[in-house]
Amino acid sequence: MMQSRLEEYFQKYYKVCCRVAFTLVKNQADAEDVAQEVLLRLMVYQPEFAGEEHEKAWTIRTAINLCKDLLKSKWHKTTVGMEAVSLEEWEAFEMPDLEKDDTLFLVMELPEQYRSCLYLFYYEDYSIREIAKVLEKPENTIKTNLKRGREALRQKLLERRILCH
Image 1 (cartoon, rainbow, N blue to C red):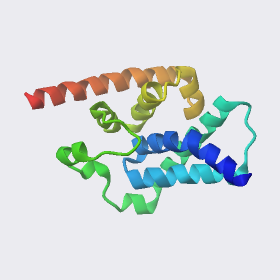
Image 2 (cartoon, rainbow, N blue to C red; image 1 turned 60 degrees about the horizontal axis):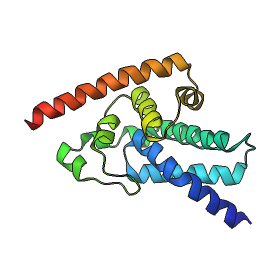
Image 3 (tube, rainbow, N blue to C red; image 1 turned 90 degrees about the vertical axis):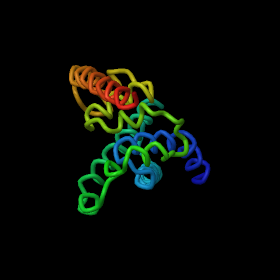
Image 4 (cartoon, rainbow, N blue to C red; image 1 turned 180 degrees about the vertical axis):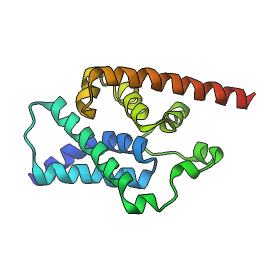
């Protein structure tokens, strides 16, 4: 029974947690570690959920919190991050379970508050209300971050277009 429950969680949430974590930590191995830790916590703590949406929100919130903990850790602060990778290397990098999406890599270059909102809104199809609950922020803050994030993304797209010509 424990095996089938783990398989069910894996099927439902592993890829989602990997994608969310990857947008925050910008590293495939760390993203996979975070996703595995989320699944482990689901199995160990077996929290009660009001419904499937609550369960999914819990997994995403847990992934975000684990990413924040990782980013604050001494190990992470003393290593070189993905932002040190050149644009050519970035473009050659492909993460399994993610479609080739140049825009996603530009989203990942944005500050965390914009990156999280844009990713959850456009890639996970969350509403503003749902994002506010998951990120534990007021809806107006989410709206502002989406607006500012879209503008920052538009600037990056324009810069990239100018550099390509």
